[in-house]
Image 1: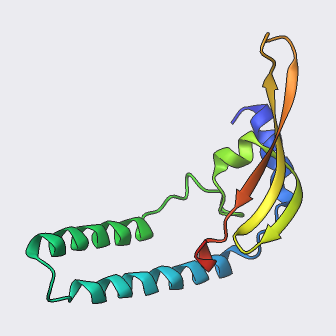
Image 2 (image 1 turned 90 degrees about the vertical axis):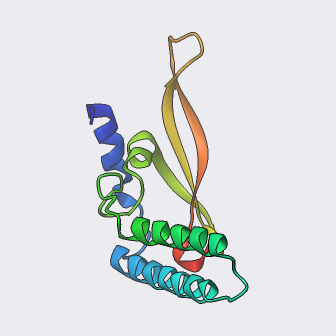
Length: 133
């Protein structure tokens, strides 16, 4: 990481998304329920062999990605993508609703003429995957 990206990353340490182990446990339970539901649908006698094959393949892919380790892409403390934390400086929590939290964030960019640095403000929604959103 460059010095600037590291500074932005460190400035975002205040983000509080709740305890990550609890969020991961809840998300794991939701996913396991989804896998069980898909397994039940595979037993449908009306399915053709081709339909059953493709559904089994999709289910295997779902299980693979559930077990895949993406730790190098995600921050170990927040569970958010490292690139997001490096590129944006989170300024404040703007709102919270049933689909997650909305944060006001900024990033520095060069102006169109390339001479001055301009602050771009954006809203970033962090979904609560455990609630199915």
